[in-house]
Length: 265
Figure 1 (cartoon, rainbow, N blue to C red):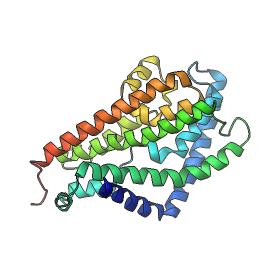
Figure 2: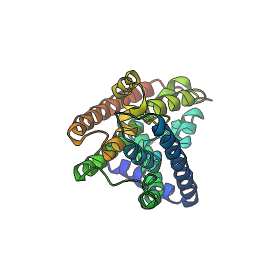
Figure 3: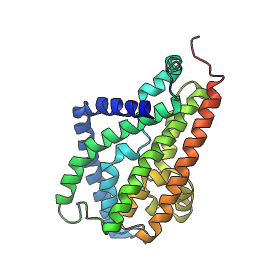
């Protein structure tokens, strides 16, 4: 475990050096949140939702944009290139489990990018006028459950992204595959349209999949859209999915590496 933590620290330090990129990303998320809020304000003047109120939705949007790097389906170009160009042969020479090496690299990239982009937004958003700004959590219990759920969420999304890396052993190229993967995760995770605003059928389908547990659940807990009494069940689902994905991912990776084909050799 010590060597995997070293990978985590190394990738974290590298990612923290790109401050200009983090500032640019933060500004993009900030103005994108403002635009979405204005659209939803116009939407709620015509029709409302029983699942989430407008103040709850505004907080949801701010948190979604602040922690977008953490909960998004963005992948690591370096890891993809390692598989596609055959450089994975060098990784296989290292005395490490390649699944967990990728997992901790992905986790570190998400955490470093999320911290740099989220802190300025979390400072500025609550200072905006009422109706535009981020509201306080629904309660202290919701805040604690939000933090727990967010931590499990980033771990879960890292496991989901690792499944994509494993798929490259079979496709040999991320072209097309990545677009399909990104669209599925982002849609069913509520990035394009908040799950609470979807028809009941789509909501039920989204909550059957793990994507919403990483990219939607923490923010609905914070806003109070999901009650604290119900949050425990969803957090348990996060843990179950995390165990299922990491165990199955490890087994599939180890099995595939026994007959891996290196491109170009």
